[in-house]
Every structure is written in structure tokens, then in C-alpha cells.
Length: 194
Image 1 (cartoon, helix red, strand yellow):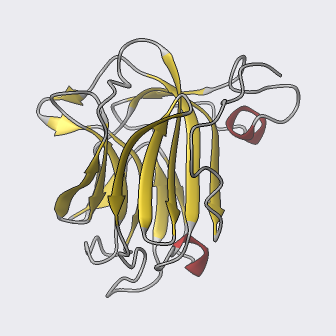
Image 2 (cartoon, one colour; image 1 turned 90 degrees about the horizontal axis):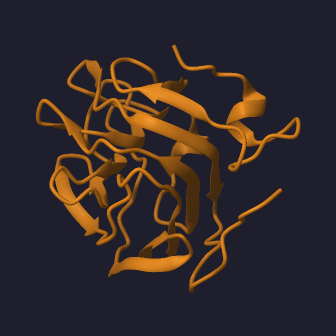
């Protein structure tokens, strides 16, 4: 089981993306949070960012999922999912059962540390890898409005058809969600030290 201490996850207590992270084993480790309107991004601006290290894109044909705000019964209406593309290792953003809202081009499963950010500003959705824009698309999707109630948040997996699936394998650090703010809209320098 992953060490789920808050200081490792969010960088407090002297830890950061450089010297503190969680390891997800790809076989059952994940974080989940109870349903809340806080996890419904609607049509507004947002930023989700993290630092990661992985060398595995898929296992037995199942994509690895980094983040998901799934409905409480697994309904796909409104789900925002960040998955690893099975063939390229790039980040792919899905909306429920409608894959490939946006597919990045950089392999983030190459046994190296990467800072990854997804932002939406107005109707522009972007992926950034190591501070460089890795994809952009016009998008005004309502993410987080579910038929069955308020969305639950998953980090390192997602919820589909009554079970938790798509377990991520690798390290994650400094996962941050900003609802209502697109922190990055152009190239930037990600943090590299304390």
C-alpha cells in the first residue's frame, strides 16, 4: 500500500517534488475522496498539476489513469479523466466514454521525472509537460455534472462500471487542483528545487 501521509503528497514538512513522492504499485494503490461539488469543474477555468515518474503505459491492455472525477455510480456523464495513452505514453484527456478530447505528444512514461499540468482558460484546454505546451484544443465541456450525484475524486485510478480500474504505476508528487483558475496559459518554468 502506498504511503499516504499528507506531507508526502502535498510537499509539506520539508518534502517536495524533488525529494518526496508517493509510489503507486499499479495493482491496487490509489487515493479517493468522497463526492463533493468541489470536484465538479463545470465549464469554468481550472488547473490540475503534478510531478510524476513512470515507465509503464499499460498493463494487460488496460490504460493507466492518473486522475478522474467520476460519478458515484460510475456514470460517464461529466467525467474528467487524465490517462496515459497505451501506445505513445503521452497524456490523454478523456470525457467519460468519449476518449481523446486532447492527446499530448510527449512520452511521460520514459523513466524520467516530468512536471505535468492541464489547464482550461475560457474555452481553451491545454496540456503542459515540463513547462512546454504539449497540446491545445477548444473545449467548453461541462466536467463534473453527473446523473447520479456529486463526483468523487480519484488519484491513481478511476471508477468504471462498479469497480476501481486503470491503476497508475509509478511515483506522483505535489498533486494540486485549482478550480476557477487557469494558472498556466503559456510556456513556464516548472519548479526544479526547494
